[in-house]
Every structure is written in C-alpha cells, then in structure tokens.
Length: 294
Image (tube, rainbow, N blue to C red; front, side):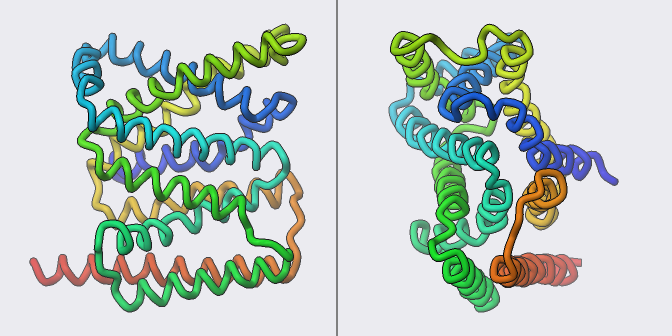
C-alpha cells in the first residue's frame, strides 16, 4: 500500500468511525457541541500555523475581500453540515447520515453541471437517475423525504463547490472558515450560558476533555486527507471516499442496532447500485485514458 493511499484511507476511516466519538457527547445539545468544536478547531489550527510559520499567509489571505466572502459562505455550509451530522448521530440516525455521504458524490456531479456548466456522460446521468429512484423508494416507504440524508449531501456538495472556487488550499481555507464561524460560536455559548443555569457538562472533566478533543477529531482527518490526496490519482480518492459512509452504516446497524425496513433496504440497494455504476465508469475511463497514453 502506497503512502498516499495509507494517509487518505486513514482519513476516511477516522471520518467513518467519528460517530463513536460524537455519541460520547450525546448528553449535550448538538448546537453546543458544534460551537465548542468550532472553537477547539480554530485554536488547534492556529497553533499549527504558529508552529509551521504560516500565520502571515493566512492573515494575508484574510485581507482579500473575495477570499473572506467565500470563506464566510463555505463556513456557513460547513457549520450546517457539522450541526446536522452531530444531531443525526446523537438522535440515532446514523444510517440516514451515512446515506447522505453515499449520495454526496452524485450531488456534486449534478452541481457541476448546473453551476459550472460541466457535461455529464450518459452513464453518469443513468447513475443520478437511479439514485433518484432510490430516494423515491425511501420516501414512499418512510412517508417523507430522507431530509437528513439530503441536507447532509447538499450542504457538503455545496461546500465542495465553494471550496473549488476558493483560491486557498485546504489548511488555509479551513483556518479562514473556522475563524469566520468562531465569533458566532462564542456568542452562542455566551448567550446560552447567560440565559440559564450555565453550559451543560463543564463541571465534568471527562466531558471537558471530549469537547477540547473535538479540535483533534476535526483537524486530524483533514490534514491526513490533504497530505495523502496529493500523492494519488483522483480515481483512487473517489473510490476511497466510500469507506467513511460504509463504516458509518455498519456502526448504525451493528453497534447501535438501528432498524431498517424492507423498503429502506431496497432504497439503499438501488442507491448503492447507482454508486457502483458511477464509480465503475470513472475507473474504466481512467484506465482507458492511461492505456491510451502508454
């Protein structure tokens, strides 16, 4: 296994196992967890910048109006995604959360067509249509849209689109994003603390340690991904990304005992077939292109 594959796979494994961490904080409100996560992450990232001597670079980027505007927009999407994911995990909706990240690549392709004017190939259209059928099956079975999955997929797909438009790299971009979110996170915590008996869990050293650790849980996989993805081709990254939702799905079924009906099983299966079609076509085209070059 190459170094690039190992680093990237490690990132997706950490993301896939992250529900195990967030479940330890399910006695807290999801908004409170995410607010602490933002503050812990911004602190950790800026310590990293000080150690690496890259703080000036981030401050220079922050002076650019377009970079600030894009960072604020992507920060809003990222914050919404974090909040939805933590809420889903801590309300026993891990399966729905995993489905959202299974659907994300397909939604990203559709956004590329609608927003960036990219062209989809026929197999990609077929995969998107098949995924739509899967969502329809889930909707009919449950009686409502799988809105948790759709919101997770949508916010992360739009986040990826904004990051694509941003001139900043992943480390600097995330630093600017959490900087944009930090004042709102701090304000929310202060309002919550002043409005009632105080913030939950801060009298428990274990809870405090877990809240501080959210910065590591957030930054570690991102840094592993940023380091590994540069060393391997995009097709390999595209295939490895399914490791995270697969692990989340297994956690939901095996560890947390979440129940799914026969109709849900059919809906999930249809979406997985769509993903296999989508990923398989990408691998085939990549191999064909490499064979042509050689």
